[in-house]
Image 1 (cartoon, helix red, strand yellow):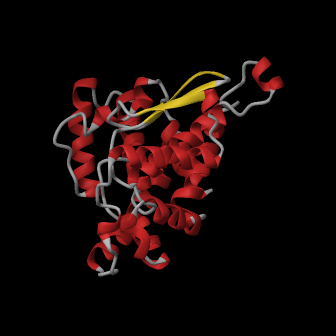
Image 2 (cartoon, rainbow, N blue to C red; image 1 turned 90 degrees about the horizontal axis):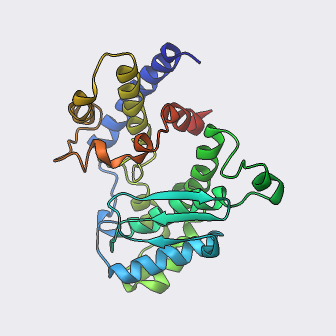
Length: 259
């Protein structure tokens, strides 16, 4: 697929999402935002998120957790070693970070003996490597198992015990333009992906240079999402895919959600 084809499709998607986002922004959907914008004890929230990841299938004998980073990611060191890193936080959003990254870890360390012997652990092809664990996390985060998640979190944190299912589901899927792709809602998620693709396209074509990337990043966040990073840690340095040489993975992330 040529970049011109990707750009054409993304331009259509970008306009459509913008129209939907504008309607949602103007509407009063009655979402109780306090549900996911509150702070519990960080140690308790971390333990809860890790427990859910284990119940979803993450085997910590093949990895482990730490909470020493600003933006969550997973490191793959071998077929039996996939380590999850998260931020230290008491926010319920930490639950989804744990589940998201555990999805990557489970996929990377879930190969059978033949796959591992052939040194193909972690996924045979890049689109598959990313899309499969992201599908795992999406099933937990936005679509399915909402009832299980609510009943479990109600037992762990008193604040949630009187929250009704519909109220919880609406809050979990609230649309909020934000700075972080990994925490984005289903409406705005693709805008995070598209602007990263556009930066890669323009960089490799020579349209912009390395010294211009952070400025271009901030400008696109203002234009597409109406938010702007206060610094590069919130902005362009948040995405470890480029440091890990995962170039051109963003079109696959986006198309994988719709095709």
